[in-house]
Image 1: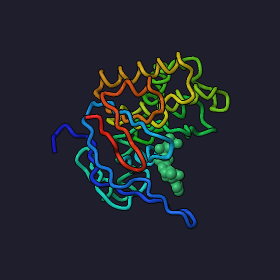
Image 2: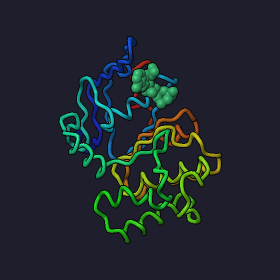
Image 3: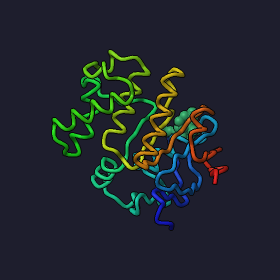
Image 4: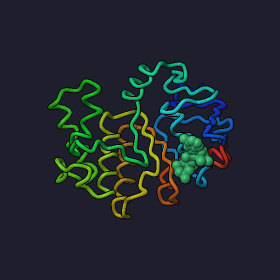
Length: 229
Ligand SMILES: Nc1ncnc2c1ncn2[C@@H]1O[C@H](COP(=O)(O)OP(=O)(O)OP(=O)(O)O)[C@@H](O)[C@H]1O
Ligand SMILES: [Mg+2]
């Protein structure tokens, strides 16, 4: 294993069982990602991209295989250990933004910081800084319902960046953004990657977003068809 590998997956299988239908969503996926890489994941609807993100980040359990992140096999962790590990190392921008509806934009971004033990005043400063980065300096106190879809997504992006996580997982990162905001988010990712050497795994259907990757992983039918190396 090269010391620069931040994510290693070996032979990962994931089956969903719902009622009488069994779906083999991942059929033995192996990959590795180096620290500081931007990897985009592309492939047809239903091929397993979201499942891959959910499994590699430990949000969902796998049937078999190994997932080693920063040297630790996350499949061997208890729920508490995993929650802690995710909080320290990972940020998420998912299709459903999962913003808490009763919290303002700023409070949503503060949440992961406060949970990680950062003081209230420091959390507030960092949250405002992140919201400024995504162009929401004048929306700190808006509730999610008082923001447009693209603005909500930008709050989710600001939140994912709050803790300066080593790894950021993004599913359909720019799905709801107009082209100007999409370009700003792309610039932001490039900047975070360059300044902080953060690793990005970005699922996208957009060729434009796909092109920001140092490489593109192409999936088909639960398998990696081409890892872009
Ligand atoms: N919770 C679930 N229960 C049962 N089947 C599921 C579940 N989640 C996903 N699937 C199935 O697993 C397969 C992979 O789904 P996944 O969401 O990973 O696809 P995707 O590549 O992200 O697609 P899209 O581009 O449409 O978002 C699909 O066939 C889907 O129907
Ligand atoms: Mg998906």
